[in-house]
Length: 364
Image 1 (cartoon, one colour):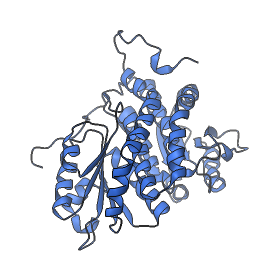
Image 2 (cartoon, one colour):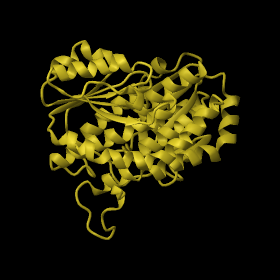
Image 3 (cartoon, one colour):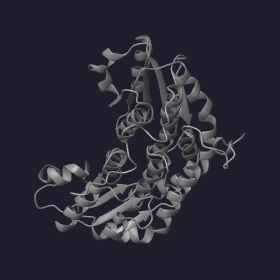
Image 4 (tube, one colour):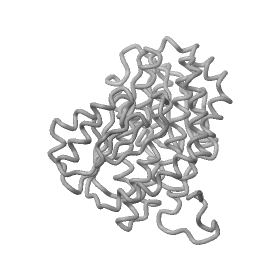
């Protein structure tokens, strides 16, 4: 099968969305780079964590990496049984006492593609002044965040020319999950993430046509459902749809969709469910209800989620994956849905309207 990332002549002029497409399909290399970065820094990560293991953990970021932090905090709590939270950098700056308990100095994991976002750097400086050590996860070598942090996991070959984050997000997700596995001494997850990187190429190749066909049916709005660690990823899916295709999109916990939002469902509504293994039957029932209301539905999840509802489209990854290891596999379908929706609407998702690669403010 032809690799979709190499179909075009690299010397030919780029068409609208070409950079984004190339970056989506280059994720096998960036996933592997993320695993390698964690393994290379494993000893330092382990030492840094155990020196600070009594501290609560706080993920701080802006935009897409904030949603990554929501998922990562959920994973950390489940894996270690310890306290973890996620907050936007602006909340640390302007509402510090509502984020950090009085007298606490959390271990901070700051996640950023560019490592140059003004409010994140300002938040990290504020946290360091209050006694918090900083671990940075980024794809940018020698960034300001890299220099500010006590320890950094920097992922090679994962940065992007496009504004909307795709491969950088997935790579930082894997690196963050790997760092959590090191903290929890979870060898199964570390080995699983290495296996995930090896499976990424085949997985991406079989996603392309189904996602294009699904978007080709026409949608006006989209909802993304996910619970537990998948809730942050559902928010990222909604953000990608808005950024890349200017399509209204929201995220909800799975069963919360029944409590009001389903009133919005019509024939031009797409509801995407990030289905877990442990609650698949309840989550798939929500998607069946969407179909009964006339909406379109897509289930993304492990192969064992197979349903007899033929009208619920499915993207399945390998059965039996630990739920932590499975998290990166939810992302490529979300990227491709947003990409094909942008293409259907004639938009250049390489350069979304009103957006920049990162936010730099002179007064922070």
